[in-house]
Each structure stands twice: as structure tokens, then as C-alpha cells.
Amino acid sequence: MQTRIPTTRLLAPLFAALLALPLAAGAATKEERRQDVRDVAENTLQRLYKSQPHARDAIERSAGYAVFSNFGMKIFFAGGGTGSGIAVNRKAKTETFMKMVEVQAGLGVGVKKFRLVWVFEKQSDLDRFINSGWELGAQATAAAQVSGKGQEVYAGAMSVSPGIWLYQLTDEGLAAELTAKGTKYYKDAELN
Image (tube, rainbow, N blue to C red):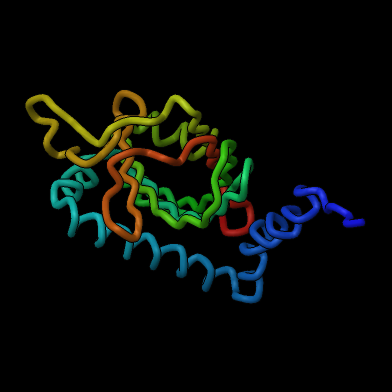
């Protein structure tokens, strides 16, 4: 007679390992970890500018921006991910280190890695993102198409809300559809 192990017992160690990934970085000093986040953000911006040159103008005109790197996995009916990033207030020239956590539902198996660049036209939206976080729900799916005079600077970005734009990069380049659903953004208490 075979005994069957419930799927949740098999998945629990995988999700625990996923959530423990950020803890492995604990050996580095606070400033080293901050610099790692800055380096990833700069690398991400350079990749974005190469694939979407007008994005540089969007960021330079903005009140601020945020850059995140995410790693996640999905096994059968559940998935999740974690990430870290930095929000930059261009006017005040300040940095706020942040984290993100993602939860997914639906059938699938796989590991994904992507980067997000948020662009905030208004200071109030940037401040709200930094101080209150942001939750991206299932309604956030959007095509990377922008039309209208003066909007070419945001070509390749998804409009998340009026005045808030989001670029998603994968290993293959700029994503045509936003897949970061069920994601919460918040301040990193350890790095700020």
C-alpha cells in the first residue's frame, strides 16, 4: 500500500526557502546591502534606457521613480515571490529602500525573475507609494501601448493609475503585459 504525501507538505519547504532568500543577505553590512540595491537599480535603468530610450526622459521629468528586482516561483496552484528596491525622490534627492512581496493563484509551474521601474509624475503619488506602500491587484493587467500627443515618452510603459507608469523588464527585454499581480510594496525597515 502506498502512502500519499499531501501536496502542501511538499510545497511548504519550497516556499520557506523562497522566503528565506532575503535573509541570506544578512551577512553583508547594511551599507553593502544598500549598495547592492543601488547597483541593481542602476543596471535595471541602463537596460531600460537601452530597450526604451524615451524612458530616460520620463524619469528625468518625473517627481521620482522606484526600481525593484523580483524573484518568484509558482508550483501547481500557488506561488509567490519577494524582491527589493529603491524609491528615489528626485526633488529632495533622497532614497528610500523598499521591499515587495507577491502572491499568485492559478495553475502553473515555474520560476520567474523580473525587474520593475515605477515612474511618478506627481510628488503626492511618490510620497504615497513610499509612505503607504502600494498594492497591485488583478485589475492591473495592461498592454504596453500608449497613444496620444506628448505621451511617446511613456511608450513601453503601462499606466497603473493617472500619472503613474510602470515598466516591466524580463531577461528577454521589455514585457508587453504586466504580470506583477497581487504585489505589496513597503519600506525596508532594515535598510532605512
